[in-house]
Structure formats: C-alpha cells, structure tokens
Length: 328
Ligand SMILES: NC(=O)c1ccc[n+]([C@@H]2O[C@H](COP(=O)([O-])OP(=O)(O)OC[C@H]3O[C@@H](n4cnc5c(N)ncnc54)[C@H](OP(=O)(O)O)[C@@H]3O)[C@@H](O)[C@H]2O)c1
View 1: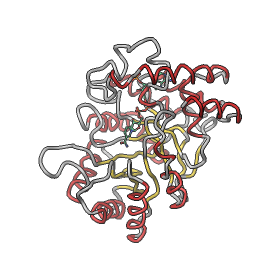
View 2 (view 1 turned 180 degrees about the horizontal axis):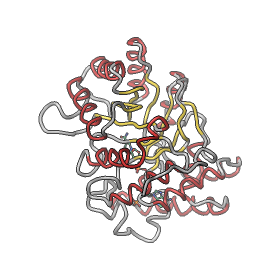
View 3 (view 1 turned 90 degrees about the horizontal axis):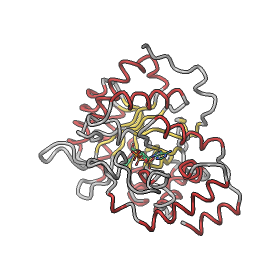
View 4 (view 1 turned 60 degrees about the vertical axis):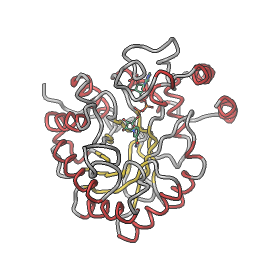
C-alpha cells in the first residue's frame, strides 16, 4: 500500500528551538539504535517509523554502527525513505554519527578526519541520501586533536553532506572547545547528544549550563534508561526485551533490584498523575527548558504511542518534583 502521511500530523506535537539555531526539533524524537537492524523484523520497524511521522515526530536519529549488523539500521531506514517517505524528505530531520568502531583497521574508529569523511560517505550511500540534516561526532577521541575532528565536521557541512554539526557525549570542557573551534571555522556546533534520564543525571553537573551559555541545544538519549524506567522489568526480564535479547546493549545485571525499587516508587507518583512511568520519565526531562528534545527508542507501535502520551501532561507540581527528587 502506498503510504500517505496523516494530514493532522502537526497538531499535537510541540517543537523546540535547538539552542540559538534556526532548527526546530520535535520534543520527542525517535532513535533507531535498537529494533531497526538486520536482526529485527523490518515491517515492525517500518510501522514504528511511519506512526512516529504521522504523530509529528520529524526527527529520526541514526549512526553508522546501528544494527546489528552495523550499518543495517541505516540500510533499513533508507528502504523506508525510498518506499514511503521520499516525498516528505523536506519535512524530515535525519541525523547520523561516526565515532565508535565501524570497520577493521586504523581508520574505522574514533575521530580522525579520515574516519569521519569516509563514514559520512558510507552513511549517505546506505540511506541513499544526498545529505543528512545533522552529523555528529559520536564520542570524544582522546588521541586525535580536537581541531582535526572539528575541521572534518566543518568540511562535511561545507560540502553539503550535512546541514548542521553536533557532538555526543562530550564533557562540558570538550564541548566548549569543540564549539569554539567550529565557531571560528564558521560552522556553529548547534547540538549536543548526551545520555540523560532520571537514573543518569550527569548532565546536570555543568553540561546543561555550558550548552545554554554556548547557545547549543540538547537532545537527551536513553531517556528511559534503555527501558529500565518503564514497566518492562517490574515482573522480571521478558525474553523479547532489550535485556533479554543476546544482542541487546542492556545487560541483565544492569537491571538491578535497587533500580527496580526506584522505578516502583516512581511508578506510584506516575499513577497519581495519571501517567505511565515512561510518560512521566519523558515529561520530567522536558520540564527543563535546556532540553530541546527527548530521544526515545521503541520496539513496538504501542510503546511509541504510550511515550507520545507524555505530551498530555508535561507539568509538575512542586510537591511532585520534591517527591521525585527524594526518590532519585
Ligand atoms: N549518542 C549516543 O552515544 C547514543 C547512545 C545510545 C542511544 N542513542 C540514541 O538514543 C536513542 C534512544 O536510546 P534508547 O533506545 O536507549 O532509549 P530509551 O527510550 O531509554 O529505551 C528504549 C527502550 O525502552 C523500552 N520502552 C520504550 N518505551 C516503552 C514503554 N512505553 N513501555 C515499556 N518499555 C518501553 C523498549 O525496550 P524493549 O526493546 O525491551 O521493548 C525500548 O527499546 C537511540 O535509538 C539512539 O538514537 C545515542
């Protein structure tokens, strides 16, 4: 069947400005790290992506290594683009990254100019795109001079292979340095992609302040702590869950009793708010005006829809915030 996007797709979603740039991002974005690779059911992933777009999610986040096997999430997304989303390209913000291990030898990892330029070319081929909207350096490289990595990002933007540049998992100091170098080159660093959730709050220790000062946006990855901040693990580890799958990045021993105890307590507050725990975890991140977008994952359309339900109640009373603070 030929896909036609829902004509009401822009009615419920909210869009935030990415730092001081011109780019608006949906407050909820979809990441294709898990559930969209060669090992997954293509049709399931396609349904999630199309439902997301029908709900106003304009931003889809990828990386060279997403799969497994690495590269297969980009290939699958490329197929969805050509079969369903081609005519909507100008309504989409597609990001990809390079920075983790991708191919053997000295040039398929970290942050050299050689790796980044080769990798963006590969990503564009896999997705059959002329350009991505955002290209990120995926993680800091302790050995490559920051100037070299940023010059590669600048070149990629200048060549029109990406419209915007960003960094991921950089410390506040590294972020300032990256923004400074890119700014001098004439390509602003508009966005940072850090991990951030109720169970992982490192960004509150300086990074969010730094981003605000630099005029950069923040897109928070793993906002549900890879599924731990949902009801997924409250009755044990399901076989079809990320922690239950052999190729899942979440290891069963990371789903600790201590975390589940916190999740149970949070769940009580969520229920009083008339929300699922996942919805409350997303809303809690979005209460901070420095968070541009929350980058979720989903293994089903039901999960996606549940997460979108968070938009119905994004505000917290002081009492709720105090209770949550005590628990986390
Ligand atoms: N820059 C980086 O270094 C980096 C690193 C990691 C991720 N990311 C990006 O961030 C995106 C999101 O990361 P993530 O997948 O870890 O995010 P997440 O939203 O914390 O976790 C997603 C997982 O939580 C479960 N889930 C989601 N909604 C649920 C619901 N309503 N009820 C019950 N369970 C639910 C699902 O697990 P099951 O599969 O078990 O059903 C889903 O796969 C990635 O796709 C990627 O784009 C970036």
